[in-house]
Amino acid sequence: MNFSVDWTDDALEALTALWLLSPDRSAITTAQAAIDLRLAINPQAAITPLREGLYAISVWPLRATLELIPEDRVVVVVGVSRLA
Image 1: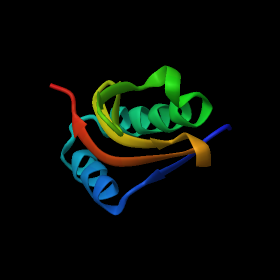
Image 2 (image 1 turned 135 degrees about the horizontal axis):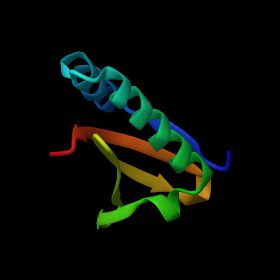
Image 3 (image 1 turned 90 degrees about the vertical axis):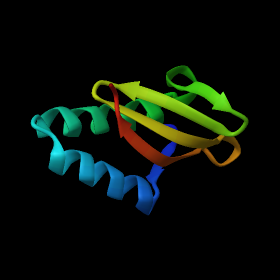
C-alpha cells in the first residue's frame, strides 16, 4: 500500500448511519473496502477534483469526499454519502 487512508470521525459517523439505514448493508461494506483499497494503492488515479484541496471517489453505492496530502502519502476521507 502506498498511501495511508484515514477517516474523520464525521465521515465514520456518516458511514455508520448509511450502513444502519441501508437495505443492502453488504453493498455499503464492499464499497467502503473498495474505496479504501483504491485510495491506498493509487489515489491520484481514483479521484475526481471538486475544488482546490477537495476530491471525490465513487464506488456504488457510496461517494466519499476527501483531502489528499501527497507529500505525507496520506488520504483523509472527510465525508461520505449515498449515490442517487
